[in-house]
Image (cartoon, rainbow, N blue to C red; front, side, top):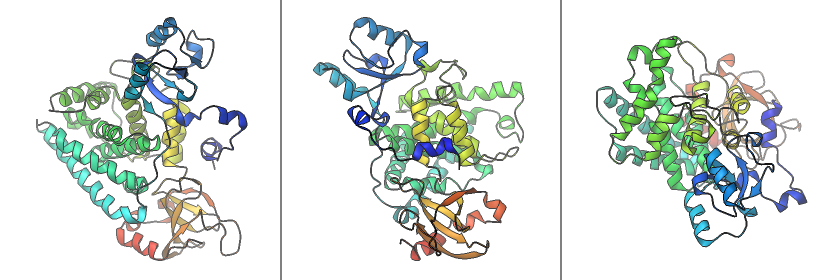
Length: 436
């Protein structure tokens, strides 16, 4: 197991000092244009050492401090529990412009009950995105109303069972990469938004930004877009134009959410100015673009290309973790990794008794002990599928502690991934559930 990711999921024991303050999960994202006197600035959009402030966390007490923040930062994180008394207008202003990094809402359903509906919706959304892309390729536009309705359904389903959608995302087809990638980025963005406690309308906004972020690629020559090898420098420059092309395309769509237009343009910007097309430094990247950039990078890293095999979940999340604070917003990266878990739904694992299992559902209170479906015995022989809740089943048949040893590559065990992603197999597994 990898220490860097484990420490994100170990349960923290609160100390008397910690309980006096507020946890990082309760910080609030606020654009500096919306700051007001009395707010407590807990974190900047850049390292403190790059700012003129001597204290790493302070209440805004003067107009000078307020103006400096607005000049050097695009957004900050505010700790509402430590703010000074604010005027009524300032509190109202904050309420209308904050994005709270809170806790995930309780799941409204379960994997077992939602997987059938989630599968139908996932497939329907994939067809819709493919249709959008075909129309754009042929000179048409985007039906924003249809897109918004589809994303609203996605939000509703993910609020019931984020695990079902994370599980479905594992069955990737490299021949359908572009449409499937946009679908997965949309879903991953919603999953992250749910994990930080965003309201439903913000989840819809995020999902739409994810769905629309790469539409500009349909205006890139097919010979470059589908090239079965890495792009040369000239081709790469052409590919980069998908950001500006996508933004212009979405501007022409009636009633398109402004954040989706901005995200199409800036989802390749990076907080230290390494991105494109404008080379914005950390202060210029919006919240929506920050979220979509993380989801976009994760799905790209874990997807197979014609010329390159995708990374494992742990390899991809390690890269995000290492780049947090350099290319990506650090708190959002941590929350993204938390939202997926150490053992995300759809991955194959080996248990401590050497059985092979497929992860179905994360236990949010005990993320190292998910609900799994066993598929092979300790001798690697196929067995009748059975769902095991590791949060309830603590020991194996010999009375030894039962835990996950690590993630495995299914191809190394000749596992037919498609077989286990069939509804009937899952239903049989739940029919023989071992809960205790």
